[in-house]
Image 1 (cartoon, each protein chain N blue to C red):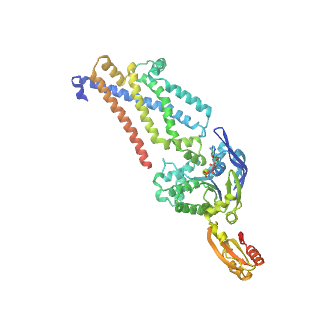
Image 2: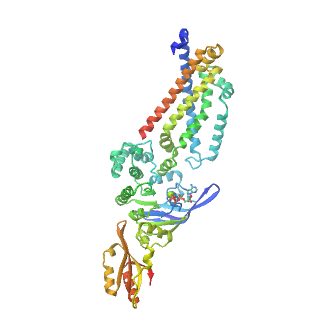
Image 3: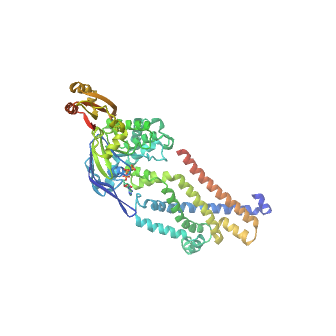
Length: 343
Length: 225
Ligand SMILES: Nc1ncnc2c1ncn2[C@@H]1O[C@H](COP(=O)(O)OP(=O)(O)OP(=O)(O)O)[C@@H](O)[C@H]1O
Ligand SMILES: [Mg+2]
């Protein structure tokens, strides 16, 4: 759906050059929810705004549904934009219009006949659950309701792509959840591709299929959300993942071990399990097979989009050879193993 | 007020006529100055950097012309324009003739005041419209003007009030209206009463215009709250 190749963006501000995007390449598949996460100033907004040419790229190409966006004439670009919905952190609703007329706005722009447009607005308001607020003005709505209007408005012209620039960042956690549910629902129902940017890993965790981590104008990691969560490869991704899934082990636990006796040794390991393997009794069968002692330090289970995802921190004691075999066994069962301490 | 005139009740007719002349001059020149000043103000805003019709050259040229025009004091403007008014209307005396300098003086003022109103609109709203594929005409007509309407209406009131003052000045050089009345009777014949009546009528006019502006703007704002 989106094919970004070697995209760079340089801003010129007060005599200075700011490299906001540095040779970014990225592919977003049709029908997926793709998240881009990064710290403030990383270049997220710049990237998403290049896709509908709110910012003009300095170099590189962007194809949306096969159409090269950077080469369109003004008129062609306006037509293309009608098929790319966008929602914003600050909602950007027109205070001069009612909820109904705000949703009507993009249809007016596209020149949809009045009656047909009015019918469509009704349906959209129903979809976002705001039928009873049709005649209100945006100032009379809560943040979550405003964003629902924003979503209805973005969907009005039947877009094939929805861009979301921090759409939940101004909302409280509960409202965020309901807006994310709505986005997920729309994605499923209409098979609508969604590209969202956020600085909140919870958002990625709840709705995204794939994620790209952007740091200092560059994409440093991209892949399935589950993969990035279970095995973050860069310090930036690490800190994002840790922010939502408790993976840090309190320092004293790294030392305070059961004294190994005789020829047995101990290891502190973290086991990450994803999806189906979360249901299997793999740990107990490991204990039986390799005659180990296991001390459970910490465990948690979470959900990434619709898949269970957990991790377990264990201290295991036993004969060195058997320990090695036990780890190999767990790995062979599809678990991600990380050794935190050897002793 | 008529009691104030006492024996001079013959003057009531003159005051009423002069009041009507002033209202007439101010109304017509407000309307005419907006016909030119509103588009100018829109161009001043939209040709700004990063706006929908960005055009640095045009913006600077227009801005300088507007500034130059605004820096000429009205009384000098009035005298400078006499030949032009004569050419256009056939005379430089009277209410109709006054409309020419009043309108021309108000145009740059209106341009700036419209610019100020439209500048207040958040960039995000314009961007949202751009992201939906709106063209410049649609953004001006459906976003900029409606969003700025309360502020624009207050601008109209300020313009009209300014023109009341200007029209009195025009009256002194034969422009008609309350200015002429005050000058003839108050200044040349030392009839204090006429001066005071003129002042009171002017105050009422200005207050009325401000209240009308505040009211209309307030109504719109309330509806949107
Ligand atoms: N219009 C602009 N002119 C100059 N520099 C800009 C402009 N917009 C963004 N930048 C710079 O580009 C870099 C990336 O900005 P961007 O807004 O894309 O970051 P972001 O990841 O969206 O950050 P945030 O989470 O704070 O919104 C920053 O260094 C920023 O200062
Ligand atoms: Mg941003």
